[in-house]
Length: 105
Image 1 (spheres, rainbow, N blue to C red):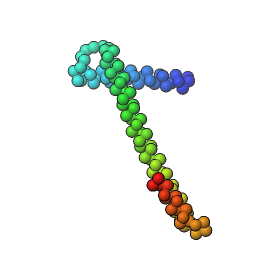
Image 2: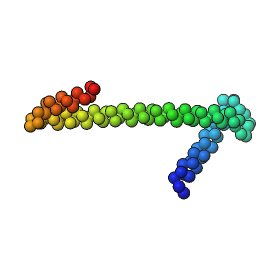
Image 3: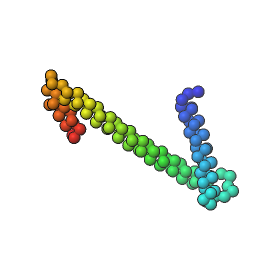
Image 4: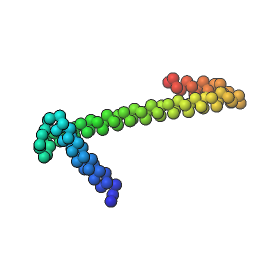
């Protein structure tokens, strides 16, 4: 079974699972009661909610990753600056200042 087939199968399974959950929530909210199938507009609405939630999750995750990368870069720069600072052989203070200056720019 190819990976594309697996992804499609999971997507169909997930959509069915979500549609069932949406039916449950709609019944609890009193929006629908006793209907076997969801109205096409309700399915479209559910799809829009899923897409919006997926986008929000992706943006949140990317924000976390950007912050983590930024922090890692700053730590690495400081480690390099400290290494240069401790070196007297190659004008370490000057190199350390140049490395730390990149943080501000």
